[in-house]
Length: 298
Image 1 (cartoon, rainbow, N blue to C red):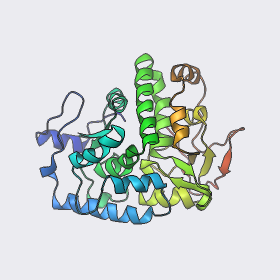
Image 2: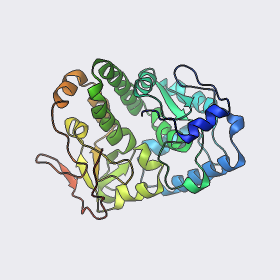
Image 3: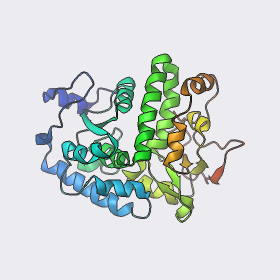
Image 4: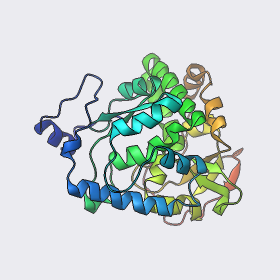
C-alpha cells in the first residue's frame, strides 16, 4: 500500500501529469498507446478464460455487470457509471501505490484507487507493483457485490481509525488485507481442493490462479481473524498459505470487530511464519511445501 518513487512514477512526473493532494488525477486516457490496449486485451482474454470454474461467481458476475471487456483499457468514468448506482463505490485514478493513510481514507469513503498505467508486454506474467490490469480487473468487479463492498468500506474505516491511533498496527492490518482482498479463497466443495478464488492478486495472475486452487504445495486454512493478522507473507513468490472464508458475509462480520482492542492485544504477540501450521488451525489442505523458498517472510 505504501508509495515508493519508482521509475514509472518518475516518468509520470516528467510527463507533467498532475496529482491532487489525495494522490488522485484524471485518467490520462490519451496517454494509452496501442501497445497498452493490446496488453489489456491479451491479459483480459487470457484471464477470463482461465478463471471459468476457478473464480467465485460473484467475481465473474462483477466483470460482466461492469462491462469490462477486451479491446482497450476501460474508461474509469464508464466503470463508475455502472458501479456507483449499485454500491456507492467509485474508482479514482492514481499514479501508483499511495501512502497507507491516504489509501485507508479513500476506502473509508468508498473510493478505490486504481493505478492508471499498463504493464509492458514483457511483464505479462509478473509485475512487482500493481498496474491498471491488477487494480481494475483484479479488485473492482467485487466492489459491485454489496457484501464485499461493505467489507471493504468497513475495513477502510477501521484501518483508518487504527492507523491514526497507533502506527504499529499497520503490519497487522496489511496482513488482513493481503490474505483477504489480495489472496483470499472462498469455500466451494465442488471445486479442486474445496475452494474458489476471489483475491485480486490471484485473479489477475495466470500462475497463481492455477497454483492457489490446484497445487498441493500450499496450506489452505479456515479463516481466523487473529491468526491471519499474525501471519507473515511473501510478496515475491506464490503464497505458502491461503486463508479460506465461508462467504463474503463472514468478511463483513469480521470488519465489525473492535479493531482497537484486538490490535492492542496482537501488537505484543509474536508473528507466525507464512507456511506455519499452528495447533488449533482448521486445516482444509496441508501443503506438501514443494518448491517453497526458504528465506524470510515479511
